[in-house]
Structures are given as structure tokens and as C-alpha cells.
Image (tube, rainbow, N blue to C red; front, side, top):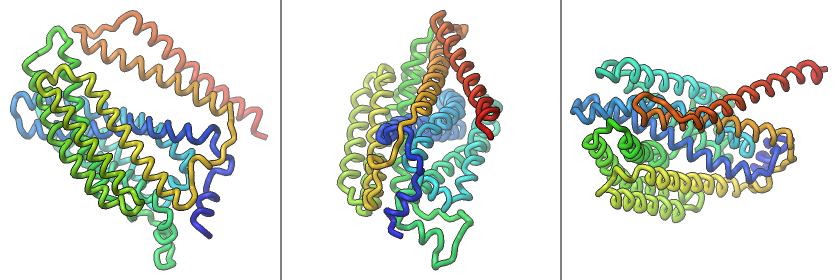
Length: 401
């Protein structure tokens, strides 16, 4: 059987419930949010460990803030990771399920690795960050989070190389169902996407934290200026390494898919652009927090597009295209997705508004408008749960024959 025939036979026979290209766009956009929180979690975790080992007063103070940010970032990374995963399963189901079969042991272990990383990060923040105890939990948490990133990287690397699946499944004609081998990986790409983006994400976070906290009545201008300057220094240093890693990524994976120049130009351009941004704000970095978030998300969007281009080119070798994925518009599914999105985004928006406003007030109060919006958002969520319960009851009572 030819590879292109195999890929087509492995697709969902019912097809996608809506235009497949729409899911592809949503995949790219939601991945930006996911990778921001994931890498920022790794960056804040690494810095908190450094701060408690350094023990200098300003570093310790900022290290406690970073320790508090870490479990929050991990939680947001988990929540925002659900969306791109679902979109992958809709339009790239042959790739996702084949990769999970070939690396099945680590796919299952991944869940427990993330649980352990989150729990240990929360343990350190709650019980150890005040006086520096339980630093081992922060170190182990960082190791687990990085390993989780490695597992996802390996799964993706396997998924875009369908020409190797048969050999990996039965090397030498002997079937291997253990799922314990990492069949494919690209160290320069991983280094670019994980530790270096973690450094840049943390630098951006420092600029935003300094900009945000400066609005408090009890703000410490000297400490916040020091925090913003540290973010600029980290950003300028890591952005240069970002470009070097990008060139190595281009030389390692580029020739395989004929994208050497594309990856090199994109990553080097991102490196130069980010360096010039940090250079342009280093005189007054504390004022650049809001703008920094916009610049960083734009950079991550370009990285997300590059990932999708590589996947598209790889599958194009076997006549697999999202544009040609079969679909039957299912308005029931579309409606359910839309209602779920509205309810979920409303609740998340309410939480963000509460956190933002409470952090700026001395007594943690929020505005009356925010409270009204919160009641609407929680009402939508309650209605959403009720709707799903009714659908389940209807299915169980009337559709099960």
C-alpha cells in the first residue's frame, strides 16, 4: 500500500464537521497561547531556582513572584493546550494516532509527568517559596516539565514522517508494541522552541509584571525598575541565542523538507526583531510591558505558522492536504462548539479581569461592572452544564435502543 493511500484510509470516514481550513487556522492561533504559557512556566520555574540559590535580596523577592507564577502558568498551559490538541485530532488524526501508537508508553506517561510537575511547582510555591525550603521540589518540577516538552516534541517529530511508520512499528519485520522508543527528534528545533522561548517568554513576563505592578499605590519603583531592566537584559541575550538555534534548526531539519532557507530567514529575522525591540525599550523598560506582550505574541504567531508550513510540506509529499480533507457540515456540532467557546472564554475573561483589578487594589476589590459580567459568565457556564446533562439524558433514554 502506498503511503498516500494509507493516510487517506486512516482519516475519519465521517470527515470534519466544518471547513477543515478553519480548524487549521484555529490550531495555529490557539497553539500561540499554549506555547506562551508553557514556556513562560519553564522560564519562571528556572528563574525561581536560580534566585533561591543566588540568595541576593532582589533576586529572592522576584524569585518568590516567579515561584507563584509557575503553577499558574502551568495550569493555563494545560487548559490552553486542549484546543490545539482537539484541532490536531480533527484534521491530522492519522498523524496524531499513529504517533501515539508508536510512542504509546510515553503518551500515557505524559499525563502523570505533567501532573507531577504541576503538583511539585504548587508545593514549592505554597510551602517552600517563603523561606526557601523544599527547593528540591522546584528542581524536580522543572525537570518533569522539560521532559513533558520532550515527549510532545518527539510525538510531533514522529507524526510528520509517515514514510518511517511501518519500519518503526515492525523493525526488521518484528512488530514492536512497547511504545518506549523515541523514534524521531530534532535537538536544535527543541532547543529553539523550549528553553530559548522560555527565556524570552520570561523576559516578556518581567516587563509586563513591572508595568502592571507600577500602578499599585504601594509600588516599589526601584524594585520594579530593576525587574524591568533584568527582563531587558535577559531578552537581549536570549534573542541572539534564538537566532543561532534557528540557524541550527534550519540546517538540521530544513534539508529534509526543502525548507532550509525559509526556516533560516524566519528564525534569524525573529532574532533580530526581538533584539531590536528589547534594545529600543531598555531606556524605559518599565513602560513597555503592554507593548511587549503584543510583540511576543506576534513572534509566536510566526513560529506557529512556520510549524504548520513544515507539517504541510511534509504531508504534501504524500498528497495529504488539509484543504482536501473530507467534511460534512454538522451544524449541531458547530453550535455546540460555539456555545462552549462563548461560555469558556467568558469565564476565563472574568477571571482575568478579577485578577487584574484585584491585584491593583489594596483590599482586592473589583468593579461592579466586572461583578455583573461575572454573574453572566457563571450563568452561561451553568447553562452549558445543564445543556450537556440534558443531551446525555436524552441520548441515554431515547437514542439507546
